Image (tube, rainbow, N blue to C red; front, side, top):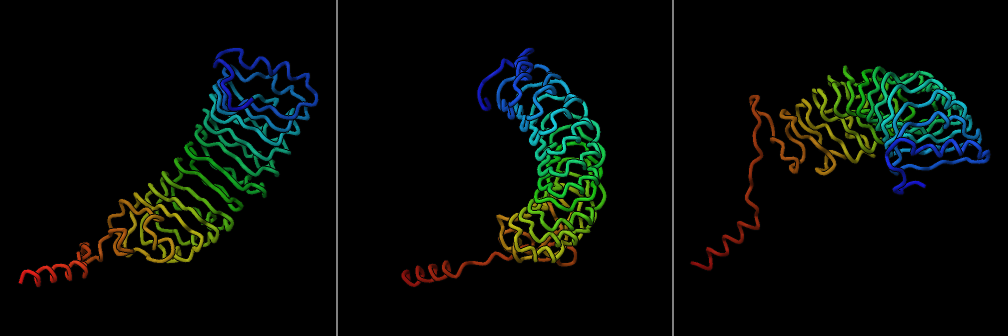
Length: 313
């Protein structure tokens, strides 16, 4: 029943869930991308223990995540994203040992990410973006050896835990500060990393050169400074790098991703110079002042002018 125009957005839209508690062989409920509203009923915790997938995302559902969600012991996928849920993430949810996918983004959930999330050993994807979560990313997530994708953007998180196993990591738009954790560089399988729009500072980017699989890296709108490490030129899979709105300085690298003007964003790094011509950076610094690139007259234009003059003479 997903992707229809079901529901009125009002009270009572989800009353039908109570009737589903008698369906002992029901395994999946998919009503995402509709117009269902009203409170998320507690009766959802009385559904059959054979339930495996519960997708009610992108509706107008209010209320909190019921504590009794732990009753659905065989759940493998939870999709409550982009509703109007409030409250905290209950520890009872972290008792669902078969859970592989957890999507709670786009609500108004607050408080901390429970440390017991580390008990979800089969978890591969977790999406908690666009909420009001605060505190740290639990180091216990490092126990989730199958966790590949973590999306925590646009919250109020302030500390980064031990991150090692991810392929995709979005933690942009939070309140992280300090230097970029050295443990970030140990995520050898990481392909996409966004640390943008935080308060990271310093020049310790060398550890990022260990991200051998990285294809997209966004560090923009932080307070990073210093020279761009030459070791970043060694990242053979890196196709997009955004370090705009920072405070980098010195000569810009020119190899690999730095050789492609469409693959790198450097805006508002006023002390950078050199690099490839397409980036339009100052050619060099002379006595502390940038020297603009010389504008050369193309040889073809010179030959055309000479030909015209010869005809006139």
